[in-house]
Image (cartoon, rainbow, N blue to C red):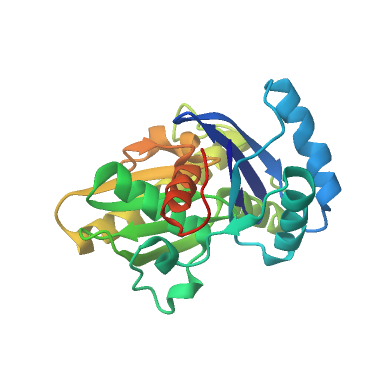
Length: 259
């Protein structure tokens, strides 16, 4: 069983792949101080609930949180008897990157590009909803050319709550109408439709620069929330980053592996 792990600033996604399918994937809170033993204590019960053996044929990790990497390495060595393989650069996996400098592109964004190109084989914009919402752009030749970055929904919401003493907190839900007749409804309308409009505006400008056939898709925890109200998003792929890590594993020139 191959483990694919996407370590983000706010959440970490762990996926288990075998026999051509994802057997399970879980979303955990990212904790910079979590030790290898605490990682095992969190994951082992999830494997038990899914009736999966706590074993691995290999581990590939995309991390944008360097302080966590050593503990993941220790966890893999101690509990899985496997080295942790990190995706760090496009040239590791035959992905051309023209971003300047190329090493500044996060591993999760490289994985998104690999998976999107594998799925469509043409220009793509991947909108990844996370702590920051990123736009990953792959051109018609399969080159990662750059993108855009904006505050993620939760970050934007926390900023609003922290700067407005009288406004109530509200759930990230799409209201039935754009005209809010109460404060919560007005906040939901402004935030949800405004954020979706921002996504559409950026995606529309990028698409115009690429020209030709361009797919616009999403991934990340909140993508399903904005898909119904976006004019640009075509579909949501919850395991896109994990899919990219699986492709990266197959392209890496390392020891024999299964998964």
